[in-house]
Image (cartoon, rainbow, N blue to C red):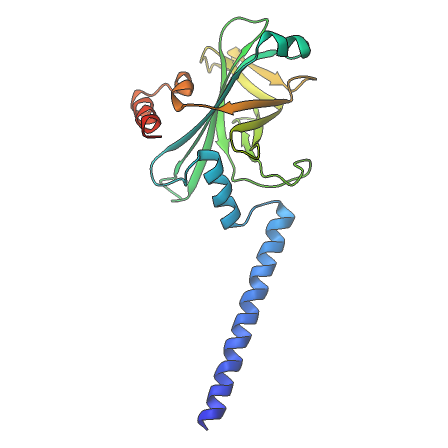
Length: 220
């Protein structure tokens, strides 16, 4: 009787394990179809982006580049002369999940003033045209387009991709002051180098946030 009960128990355990394995396979297949990373892959990629595992406190990553004269001479159709990307993650108060956002700053080679944009970002995914590499997709409210970005293998640079993204001049968020950066012949892909958080300070207006970011920068 005891042997029979043990046999039944082992059979039940085997069936449960089989069902659990099938569920995991189905979830993995669905995630692969959607281009989404599984939780472990997503966490690993976010750790690459922020050079540390995101925690409860707000975390940042700063990437920037000023294009020199030789580069601009070699890319005569490039409109952008300098660009900064600040990526932010924090715990959403309502959902209790990681929330991501971006702030973009840029200068034009033939226009005066500073231009910027901002919006929310999704978790990383692998889609068509990404060559199997994860990217984070970010959008600007009210059909303002957006950007996407990934990382170089050494994690030292971000590859930023633009089709069209709404920008504002000198922080003026008035609709009439908005413009768009359109990914032309030499403005579709930008390689930006990882740098100190202080170098993205110009993209932060809130004084408390700026102080917290600078404190975090000194700890790294």
